[in-house]
Image (cartoon, rainbow, N blue to C red; front, side, top):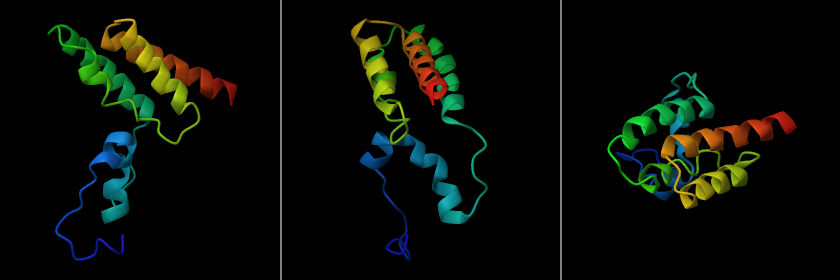
Length: 113
């Protein structure tokens, strides 16, 4: 943050791609705005709804799934999340089904903790 003082902007690039959750903290950390009231699970549920619309256009599942692969980066069960999504892509599942399966895998990790 010290290095960013006086700059016109900050580019996150690959960091945001590999850990999209970091974007939920930006306004709080930079400007002191209240922390977001939503969770990663809320994001996945919203993405499931969005994916259902996406599926009706017969677009490739990878085009939507790849952008959410890193959502649980640094969290327990992150590898299981990524593997579950990757396996769903390999099985040619619909994006909404892949995300639902990934969310179910996250719940098993939480239940085990």
